[in-house]
Amino acid sequence: MRQWSRFTGASGHQGLGKPPGGVPSLNKRASGFGRLEVASDPTGRRLTEPRSGQGCFEESRTWNWSRWGRFGGPERYRKGRWDGKYGVWEPPRSFRKPVRKIWSLFMSEASITVQLLHSADRLREPAIVSAVQSLPLPKGSHGLDAGCGIGSHCELLLKATAPDGHLTGLDSSSEHLAVAVDTARQRGISGRVSFRQGDVADPPFEANSLDWAWSVDCVGFIPGDPVEMIRGLARVVKPGGIVALLLWSSQQLLPGYPFLEARLNGTRAGAAPATADWPPRRHPLRSIGWLASAGLREPAARTFVVDIFAPLHEDQKLALASLIEMRWGSPDSELSEADREVFQRLKDRAHPDSVVDGEDYFGFFTYSLFWGVVPGETTLHSAPE
Image (tube, rainbow, N blue to C red):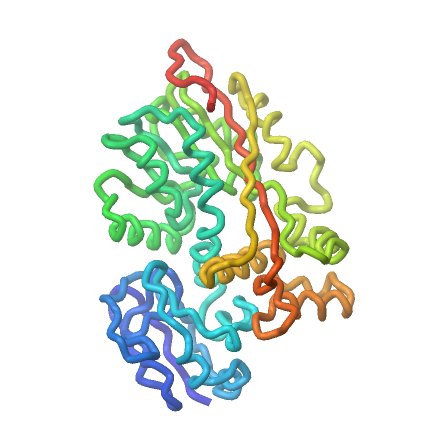
């Protein structure tokens, strides 16, 4: 057993020496993305300067080298490749066990969530792009990304309002905001986006100070009254501006296993954010009613579909694996033993039944956009196209 100290983040860095067995040494800084930053990749190439941010290791994390061996050990790990676009090391297929299981050996739960979001964004982006393009966001306007998380959509929103638009990202998580700030810097948009920590239900902005508000998988997905959250967003938007909610609404990701997927959807993770005691009007697909109850005019909706089909590139496979993990996790206690075994086989990249590696794979998911107009004298926006 070897004891590894916690990374301290951007200041007071504590380095980790090279572990035995040829595993690449870890750099003295841990990325805010929550992934492992290495001084050189397993093929010996020097990587770019690592980002600073929140440490990704839990306090006093103890590493058991026998656990590393269960995943194939350093020799198998080194046969992967460095993905420079997304900044992650992609292990070879034989190394890829369920993503959360292997990441849990290295990272805190919050950092795992950040890594899953980054990976899944590769597949979610087409729906986000389509939704943004459908909204009449005026050039040069100042908007709000409520529940911005790691800032995944900031660049897309700024493109829609270019060249002089500005965006403010609001989120309650300091760890997510640290990643968002870093991402904005890397993408060269720091001058047009700012970030604030705060409550979506009570945005820390003056009334009628913004041109529009946008929120993805936040209102209705986090604790609190969604109608009050929408009222809070509408308060800070000028009359005639829009409040738009983009929400995950459905999926079919396990082709050939309809009954298993139906049972997974009936688990707590699969039904999230809904709970057993929720009244029907609390479900996110009732957002039209929320917008009307919050006093917005002309509430409407539109759905966007993302198709996923073989042949998939490796980055698409990793993104799909992350999407499946985010959607259902590991609901072991809610499935029968037979269902658990099948689900684990489908998630296991090393198993012949791996669903993401199927030569005839097809799946899809949907995002639904709900919007309404803030009442008042001025009408700045037409309905989305």
